[in-house]
Length: 328
Image (tube, rainbow, N blue to C red; front, side, top):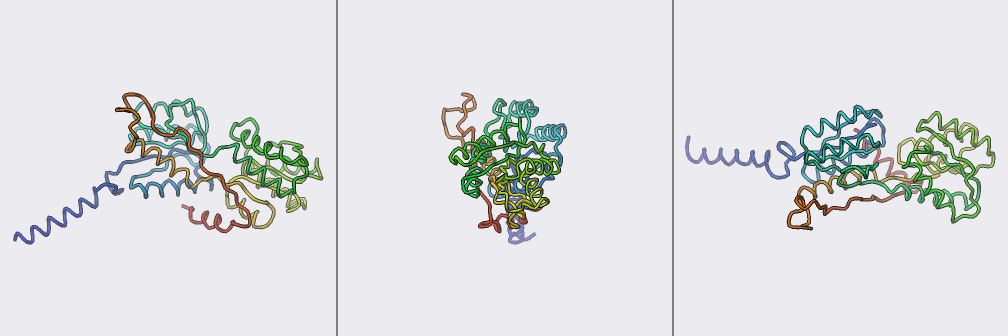
């Protein structure tokens, strides 16, 4: 082969290998980060899946999303174990129940940093928590509901009592109402996170309190349940409803004027901040000591609270358009 042709071929080959194996390439050999979750069939998690991939693309790393489509903690734990076996650079996990604590600790003991998201298990060996401040979600919802009610009237709370996340949100709602002497909470209904149950509970409350002015909902089930109940008994728009989360069904009820507004968690950006914590732990630890690992110290934040937003008719379009964009 002539020298000039040989040189040209070597240049082409070198360019190919740089493209395939170069720094930041996600084609082959890129470092991997895994998000372990459950209930992936819910629309809520579409934004998380989208944000997780978006974050990986920005940082030039491979991001993988695993876990059962349903609320199946055994299947989720199995997916978590499989993720550990792959020895990724880091794992993000929806810390929905304390039963996941041993598996989080197992990952950390294997040298894999873990960040909890949405829910937290602070007694585990997790590196950090990224998600919403639950009390703040409720407080913002309470302020918006009180304003919609002109600061007076009876309110019912639809929640899942006994679950800390939702109890904290209820506490936030109640704290906001304290600034409005004309507002009183007359009942708390347990939706059991089931839409049919939420509809029936909301109907029962409205029949018991015919002058009810508002529903404070700690999750989207309460929002849809109270909205549907209000429509069915002819009180749509008369009873003010503040929901939680930006599911398309909730947004459509806002569009129809049945739900007043909804508190929006920073769902699409949570995975980005979680990945940043892990990536910086791996690559960019500030030198708190001469050897952070040997000294057993952490230089990262251990809690990252993401911002809280609110959707109503004024900005509804942008959330609906984003939900279409998030669809798998």
